[in-house]
View 1 (cartoon, rainbow, N blue to C red):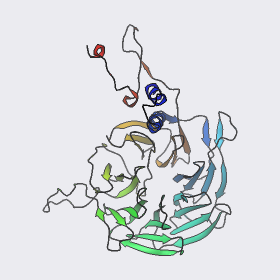
View 2 (cartoon, rainbow, N blue to C red):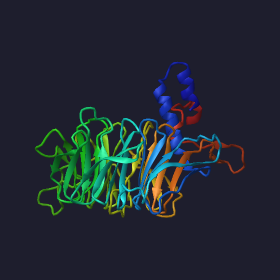
View 3 (cartoon, rainbow, N blue to C red):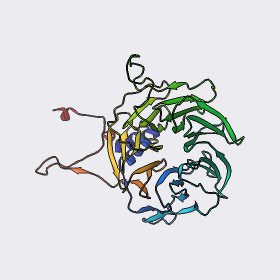
View 4 (cartoon, rainbow, N blue to C red):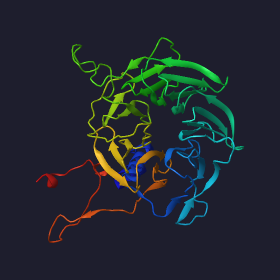
Length: 400
């Protein structure tokens, strides 16, 4: 890090590289923060979390009890120990609340004046944040598992919705109606994600083991069906062709630049795909245990080099290097299954929610330095550091 700062000061390096190095250092030092609590509001498991993309200050949570809460993450007290308070809730006696489990919550990408929520009660609700009243309600025939709004769209206001019915439904906020239906899956739609790079590109994952990439301007069908074998499987083989996983696919997440797509299935595998060509990059993450029957909400870092994936695995959060597949660490603190996590980009913080009704804050501990003594006599003391921050320089003395 010192060499990067020196290079930046002398004008030999660009500011972005220094920022990425610091962001990476912070992520690699994430740990459960004992000084920051999140007020307990929900009476049962937390299913979904989302931090507003504008100020990175307010966090939404949706629970199995049908409750939605909005938290202020800013430390207004300026004290070391503080609790993130819920500034408002949509609870059981609100009158317009969801009747069953809230599965997905998401802020409107442009400001915090609106947010969306979907539930097992077969509805998607568009909320006015200031009044805490639904401005629009979309009803569906089947149970709603997930929904997603494009983070970059300028030419449309579509919300993609995945339900028990094997069709991706697109709801238009401008007209207040279901604008379009994408057909091709043969099982319930467990996850949908818009590309952060192209506003008309949508990805859907289903219980039929398939992941489809759509251009919503094209009515003829999906552009690409992801194939875990990259087309190399023989036609006479008993294995199914054009399947992304050997089980239900219930997790999708784009990398921050939109160039790659991560998928997770109930076959206990996570795969990395080239989002342009649909090719499996064949990165081996090992076994990623996934016993969830619903949408598994995992997330990725932003502004780091390399990027990291934060994946709920049982009662912990596994942190992977996206491009090598290396398991870097496991964040432990929940007492039961972790259902969701969300990344705070400005300060490289992580928030997670689980079936233990807790929302935990994982904060970079920059004071933590691991010291290893390689010499039993204590003559040398070496400070261990990640290879990312080591100088790419050697001398003839080191080689001898």
